[in-house]
Image (cartoon, rainbow, N blue to C red; front, top):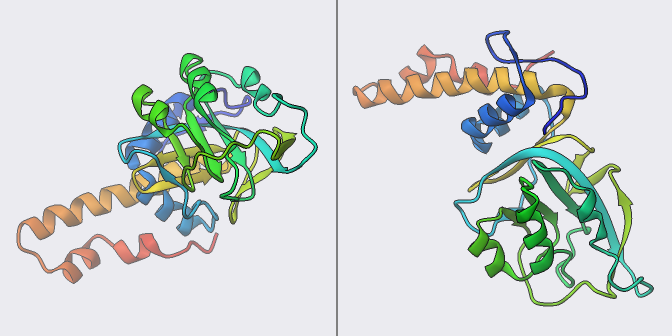
Length: 236
C-alpha cells in the first residue's frame, strides 16, 4: 500500500526495490544510522524532542500530514475526521505547533488507526489516552502526553500540505522512520540516496565493532574503515 508515485527505487547495490522493501531496510538501519546518512547528505531530518510513548515502538511509513492551530471557534467533533482518509501503512503527521496545552490525538483515533492498520502517528504536540496506545501496541511519537482535550481548543487548517515537526519540514508522502531514539524524516525523492549511504555507514560500524572486539584501538579501527569520511557531509 506504500506506492512510490511511479518512481523506481534502488537499493545500495543498484537493484530495483519496492517502497515496502525500502521502508523495511531503513527501519532495519535504525534512526541513528539514517540520521547520520542524512547529515552526510545535508538533509535536515531529525525531529528532535519527539519521542515514542514506549521505547519499543517502531514505525516506518509515508506521511499523511495534518496541520492544526489554536482556536476558540471550532466545529465540534470534526477535528479528527481526516482519519477516514488515511490509507493502510501511512503515518499520521500532526503539526500542532508543539503546543503542550491541548491534545490533538486520543483514544478513539488510536482505535481507528489500529483497526485500519496505519503505521503510526507522529505529533508536534501532545496526545492523551496513552494507555490505549500501549495496550494496542499502536506506535505514537509525540512531545508528551496530558489529559486536556483539544476539543473546542484546536482547529484543523490543512490536510496533506507541508507541515513541520519543529525545525523539520514534512511534505505528504515523505518517509518517516521511528524507534527508541526518536523520528527522522526523509524527503520522498531522496530515499534511495539515504538508504545507500546508510548501508555504507552500517557496514563500516559493523567492521569497527568486530575490530575492537579483537582488541584493536578505536582510532585505528575508525581509520581502517574510513569512518570519519562516512560521517562528513558530502560536497555533492
